[in-house]
Length: 166
Image 1 (cartoon, helix red, strand yellow):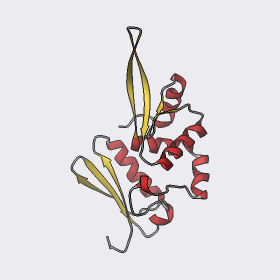
Image 2: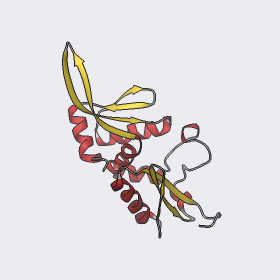
Image 3: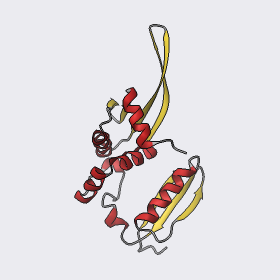
Image 4: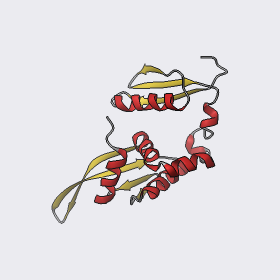
Protein backbone atom coordinates (compact mmCIF):
# COMPACT_ATOMS: atom_id res chain seq x y z
CA UNK A 1 0.00 0.00 0.00
CA UNK A 2 1.40 3.34 -1.03
CA UNK A 3 1.29 6.21 1.45
CA UNK A 4 -0.34 8.29 -1.31
CA UNK A 5 -3.32 5.94 -1.63
CA UNK A 6 -6.08 6.26 1.00
CA UNK A 7 -6.79 3.19 3.09
CA UNK A 8 -10.17 2.37 4.58
CA UNK A 9 -9.65 0.60 7.91
CA UNK A 10 -12.46 -0.81 9.99
CA UNK A 11 -11.57 -2.33 13.35
CA UNK A 12 -13.92 -5.22 14.09
CA UNK A 13 -13.99 -7.11 17.36
CA UNK A 14 -12.89 -10.67 16.78
CA UNK A 15 -15.78 -12.15 18.77
CA UNK A 16 -18.20 -11.59 15.84
CA UNK A 17 -16.61 -13.28 12.80
CA UNK A 18 -19.77 -12.86 10.70
CA UNK A 19 -19.54 -9.08 11.11
CA UNK A 20 -15.90 -9.19 9.99
CA UNK A 21 -17.02 -11.12 6.89
CA UNK A 22 -19.88 -8.66 6.27
CA UNK A 23 -17.46 -5.73 6.51
CA UNK A 24 -15.06 -7.31 4.02
CA UNK A 25 -17.94 -8.24 1.69
CA UNK A 26 -19.28 -4.66 1.80
CA UNK A 27 -15.86 -3.26 0.89
CA UNK A 28 -15.56 -5.71 -2.02
CA UNK A 29 -19.09 -4.94 -3.23
CA UNK A 30 -18.50 -1.19 -3.04
CA UNK A 31 -15.06 -0.41 -4.38
CA UNK A 32 -12.31 -2.68 -3.17
CA UNK A 33 -10.44 -5.01 -5.47
CA UNK A 34 -8.66 -6.55 -2.51
CA UNK A 35 -9.38 -6.64 1.22
CA UNK A 36 -6.90 -7.55 3.92
CA UNK A 37 -7.80 -8.89 7.36
CA UNK A 38 -5.07 -7.98 9.79
CA UNK A 39 -5.33 -9.64 13.22
CA UNK A 40 -4.62 -7.35 16.16
CA UNK A 41 -5.11 -7.75 19.88
CA UNK A 42 -8.85 -8.31 20.42
CA UNK A 43 -9.84 -7.27 16.91
CA UNK A 44 -9.36 -7.70 13.20
CA UNK A 45 -8.57 -4.69 11.06
CA UNK A 46 -10.38 -5.01 7.73
CA UNK A 47 -8.49 -2.84 5.24
CA UNK A 48 -8.64 -1.82 1.61
CA UNK A 49 -6.70 0.81 -0.28
CA UNK A 50 -8.22 2.87 -3.06
CA UNK A 51 -8.04 6.39 -4.43
CA UNK A 52 -11.81 6.77 -4.39
CA UNK A 53 -12.62 5.88 -0.76
CA UNK A 54 -12.71 9.62 0.11
CA UNK A 55 -15.27 10.15 -2.69
CA UNK A 56 -17.55 7.49 -1.18
CA UNK A 57 -16.95 8.61 2.41
CA UNK A 58 -16.79 12.41 2.30
CA UNK A 59 -17.46 12.52 6.08
CA UNK A 60 -13.92 11.30 6.67
CA UNK A 61 -11.51 13.86 8.00
CA UNK A 62 -8.97 14.63 10.66
CA UNK A 63 -10.00 14.57 14.28
CA UNK A 64 -12.55 12.76 16.35
CA UNK A 65 -15.99 12.07 14.86
CA UNK A 66 -17.79 13.84 17.68
CA UNK A 67 -15.70 17.00 17.21
CA UNK A 68 -16.44 17.51 13.51
CA UNK A 69 -19.58 17.53 11.38
CA UNK A 70 -20.86 14.19 10.12
CA UNK A 71 -23.38 15.04 7.40
CA UNK A 72 -24.53 12.77 4.59
CA UNK A 73 -24.19 13.99 1.03
CA UNK A 74 -27.46 14.19 -0.91
CA UNK A 75 -26.67 11.01 -2.84
CA UNK A 76 -25.97 9.20 0.45
CA UNK A 77 -29.26 10.41 1.93
CA UNK A 78 -31.09 9.04 -1.13
CA UNK A 79 -29.49 5.63 -0.59
CA UNK A 80 -30.41 5.60 3.11
CA UNK A 81 -33.97 6.63 2.30
CA UNK A 82 -34.18 3.69 -0.13
CA UNK A 83 -32.46 1.21 2.22
CA UNK A 84 -32.89 2.38 5.83
CA UNK A 85 -32.70 -1.13 7.31
CA UNK A 86 -29.13 -1.68 6.12
CA UNK A 87 -28.12 1.72 7.44
CA UNK A 88 -29.65 1.10 10.87
CA UNK A 89 -28.17 -2.42 10.95
CA UNK A 90 -24.70 -0.97 10.41
CA UNK A 91 -25.18 1.62 13.13
CA UNK A 92 -26.38 -0.91 15.69
CA UNK A 93 -23.75 -3.47 14.77
CA UNK A 94 -21.04 -0.86 15.29
CA UNK A 95 -22.29 1.22 18.24
CA UNK A 96 -25.34 -0.60 19.57
CA UNK A 97 -26.36 -3.64 21.53
CA UNK A 98 -29.36 -5.82 22.35
CA UNK A 99 -29.72 -7.15 25.87
CA UNK A 100 -32.21 -8.40 28.44
CA UNK A 101 -33.35 -5.50 30.59
CA UNK A 102 -34.26 -6.49 34.14
CA UNK A 103 -36.49 -4.23 36.19
CA UNK A 104 -38.34 -4.57 39.47
CA UNK A 105 -41.75 -2.90 39.79
CA UNK A 106 -43.63 -3.14 43.10
CA UNK A 107 -41.50 -6.08 44.14
CA UNK A 108 -42.07 -8.00 40.92
CA UNK A 109 -39.25 -8.68 38.45
CA UNK A 110 -39.67 -8.23 34.71
CA UNK A 111 -37.22 -9.13 31.95
CA UNK A 112 -37.62 -7.85 28.42
CA UNK A 113 -35.35 -7.33 25.38
CA UNK A 114 -34.08 -3.85 24.69
CA UNK A 115 -31.72 -2.17 22.23
CA UNK A 116 -29.34 0.65 23.07
CA UNK A 117 -27.34 2.86 20.71
CA UNK A 118 -24.57 5.03 22.10
CA UNK A 119 -22.44 7.61 20.30
CA UNK A 120 -20.72 10.83 21.34
CA UNK A 121 -21.40 12.45 17.95
CA UNK A 122 -24.60 14.48 17.96
CA UNK A 123 -24.68 14.15 14.16
CA UNK A 124 -24.37 10.35 14.20
CA UNK A 125 -27.04 10.16 16.91
CA UNK A 126 -29.30 12.26 14.70
CA UNK A 127 -28.66 9.96 11.75
CA UNK A 128 -29.59 6.94 13.88
CA UNK A 129 -32.81 8.65 14.99
CA UNK A 130 -33.61 9.49 11.37
CA UNK A 131 -33.00 5.90 10.26
CA UNK A 132 -35.26 4.54 13.01
CA UNK A 133 -37.93 7.09 12.04
CA UNK A 134 -37.70 5.95 8.41
CA UNK A 135 -38.40 2.40 9.61
CA UNK A 136 -41.24 3.54 11.91
CA UNK A 137 -39.42 2.27 15.01
CA UNK A 138 -40.15 4.04 18.31
CA UNK A 139 -37.11 5.21 20.26
CA UNK A 140 -36.32 7.59 23.10
CA UNK A 141 -33.21 9.27 24.40
CA UNK A 142 -32.27 7.89 27.81
CA UNK A 143 -29.09 10.00 28.06
CA UNK A 144 -27.60 12.76 25.95
CA UNK A 145 -25.44 10.23 24.06
CA UNK A 146 -27.67 7.15 24.20
CA UNK A 147 -31.00 6.11 22.77
CA UNK A 148 -33.17 3.19 23.74
CA UNK A 149 -35.59 1.00 21.80
CA UNK A 150 -37.67 -0.83 24.40
CA UNK A 151 -41.29 -1.09 23.30
CA UNK A 152 -42.19 -4.67 22.40
CA UNK A 153 -43.27 -3.92 18.81
CA UNK A 154 -40.25 -1.64 18.24
CA UNK A 155 -37.81 -4.30 19.50
CA UNK A 156 -39.49 -6.91 17.27
CA UNK A 157 -39.16 -4.60 14.26
CA UNK A 158 -35.50 -3.90 15.06
CA UNK A 159 -34.92 -7.66 15.44
CA UNK A 160 -36.19 -8.11 11.87
CA UNK A 161 -33.96 -5.36 10.48
CA UNK A 162 -30.80 -5.67 12.56
CA UNK A 163 -30.52 -9.30 13.55
CA UNK A 164 -27.93 -10.70 15.92
CA UNK A 165 -24.23 -9.94 15.93
CA UNK A 166 -22.61 -13.26 15.20
